[in-house]
Structure formats: C-alpha cells, structure tokens
Length: 101
Image (cartoon, rainbow, N blue to C red; front, side):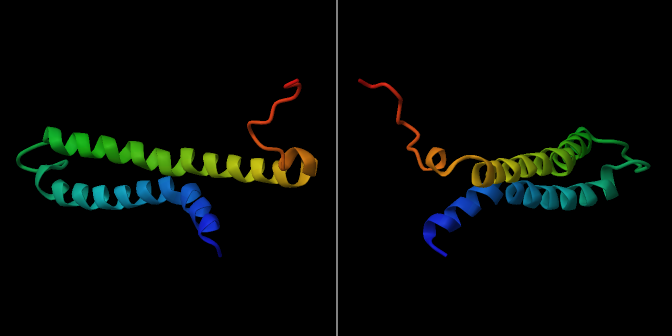
C-alpha cells in the first residue's frame, strides 16, 4: 500500500478510533468514580460523576448512531462514484469549470 492510500484510510477511520478510545478511557473513569460518588454511595452523587456519565452517554450515542451512519454514507457514496458515474466525470479535476472561454 502506498502512503496516499494509508492516509486516506486513516482519514476515514480516525474519528471513530479517537471516539472509541475516549469512550474506553471515560468508561474506566466512570467505573472508578461510581465506587465513591455513584448511586447509593454514602456521599451521594457528585457533579463530576454526573458530568462524566452525561459525556459517556453522548459518546455512546455518537458511537452507536452517528459513526455508523457516516461510514455507511461514505461507503454508499464511494460505490456511487465507482460504479454509477461515468469514468470521465470521476477523473475530471475538481477545479475545472465549463466555459472558461
């Protein structure tokens, strides 16, 4: 594989990987906080615990809904570009305009 292909794959999967790592780290933090500041603890709920859980829920929704939707969209658009559009449209430069007379 060339460097260009690897960069393209990294651009595609960089955000899901970063969100996944952030989710795993925050899940560990919430598990550690829940022993002391979670539900049923003697100290009660702390604002830090509530904020961490809220961010964890948002990350979970992003990983379960948003990331697959974006990846499916990119895959469908790649297939449309690859199989439906004529080859001359695919290879045309992006800044080429018609009628620059």
